[in-house]
Length: 125
Ligand code: FES
Picture 1 (cartoon, rainbow, N blue to C red):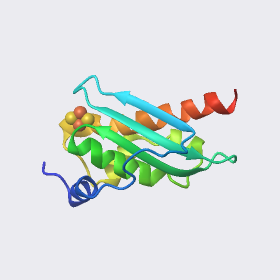
Picture 2: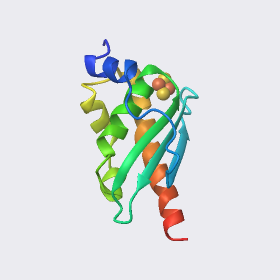
Picture 3: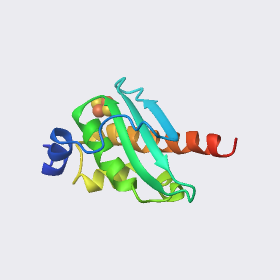
């Protein structure tokens, strides 16, 4: 399967790249399958709404496209909704990924969960 236009668009012109200096939730995960690493930064307000999100991904094109799409999808969500974001929803929003690239989207969902967990630790401290 070739990459869809949506994947190429998000890979070549990714949204939300870089660090958020005022992030209050940061999560990093690595893929055991390929060794790629994804870091997600979240700025969450007092009502638990994700005001901003960004990413730094040391990984393949599909991982970058997944990070771009996933951060775009969760901005404006509350953290309970965002924590439930499934990698399959990211894949669907990208118009599909080749089978051997599905794990790249899993990284995005896991990194978001890790960032939310990080926020919760800080918020209850
Ligand atoms: Fe590992 Fe894409 S090949 S994240």
